[in-house]
Length: 208
Image (cartoon, rainbow, N blue to C red; front, side, top):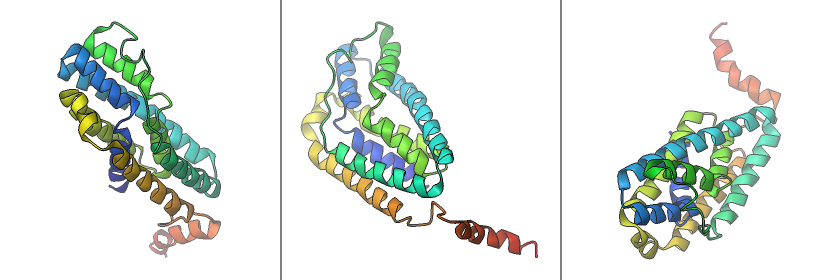
């Protein structure tokens, strides 16, 4: 549950005012058909974040636990700083292709999410937590929580919600998670052979 809740929270907050949320507003204003836009966002996010999660899982296996702890911890701290930088929608993000409302949403959201804050966050979260399904489900839910209201309410969301405050909260969460990771709170990254032996001891005791 921790992986799911943390993933949902940081992505939902980090997505507020992000490029893809602005894209949702543009698509809603252009097509005025919320259902295919929402379905397109869901499909694009699932595909994009599943790939990002697999990359994070591969990174976790490729690096040793000590190196991984520092890489992931510093990545979260870097994400905290990145969250404080406002994002802008590229001029052509809302009209790259003509594939209908659903197809246009899938393609534009997938491309706009490439290298975006929330995709990088998904990679870091998947490296931090071993449960890929919970991470992807959480980041996808976070994206939907941020973007579905944007589809229905359009630019009212951007004018009503204080984006600096929201981004500040998201940055604080990333900073806390990053520091906790560096100090290995909860022993999520066994740092030595002795830690691994200790973790196996209860199961071995059952056989003695």
